[in-house]
Length: 99
Image 1 (cartoon, rainbow, N blue to C red):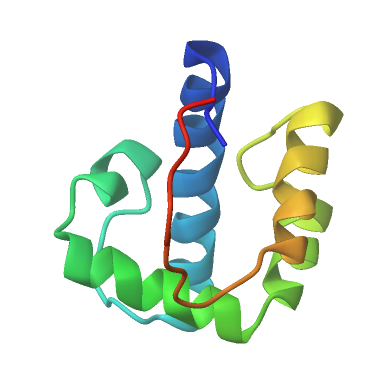
Image 2: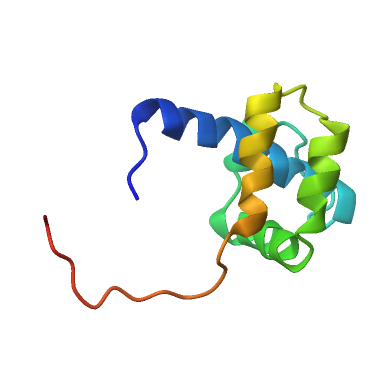
């Protein structure tokens, strides 16, 4: 899957906000920023802890959409809610065909 520049920008608007919400709710990284831009500036290892916690409790996505703490519009919240369908795990590419 390849995102367009517009879709990529939207992802980097929505995903950090969701991660901030999850961190604030579960207090995985105490005293960490509640600003999505600052949160995404954290080390990858810290962000992964929050991501893993969300994967363990995907119902937090519904809660985030219901509360809408970052005032997203309905289309943006629909995108976030679609992430409940994520396949979580390790994946391997055995062969990549250009066409």
